[in-house]
Image (cartoon, rainbow over all chains, first blue to last red; front, side):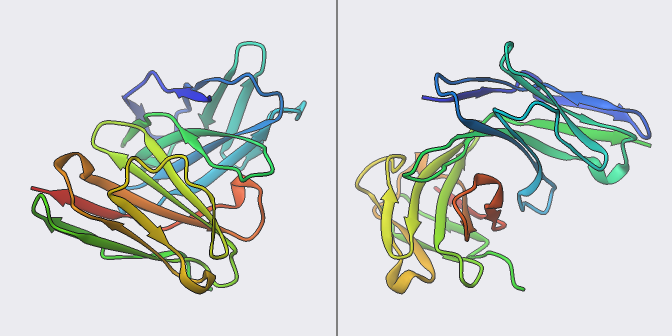
Length: 116
Length: 114
């Protein structure tokens, strides 16, 4: 079974500063993917970034980067130059790649509030 | 292109009643997933359809939950009879491929059982 742990239930960040959201995972499988989703107050889940277990380089998507440390089983999200619109819940998730389908396992989420 | 839609957005029912949630995936998406987030807990996988077939229903909590996807288009999730612990937000996601990062989520249905 897979498990995702997000130890920060909530955090404040000053606008224009960078923020790191922690995520650790546990799985015995070798082939898996790690994901971050953003959930603004409107409720929809927005895909942000993906890292495959065999990817050697850390994933980046605009202001989002994923600090992947495989040996430590961590997949922290870094948001650079925070904006007010970044205020939201952020979920770390993983999926083990199997032929039967790729369901996502989520962490408990971190609520981020960006202060002007 | 329309995204994943879910109906209703909110539902308040009494314990013992029946509720049916609906999900319309993105047109052409064969894969449809249901997830739910119970208050204060993680988002949990419920089940996965490929077209009209249930590929994985390992996350369904008990036999009070029944999911269908007639004709491989929209899906319904019926809770009968509803219990207090069923309260939460029910998400639907769809994808064309099998890669997880291609899952597009709907806005969710907030279910409150009183």
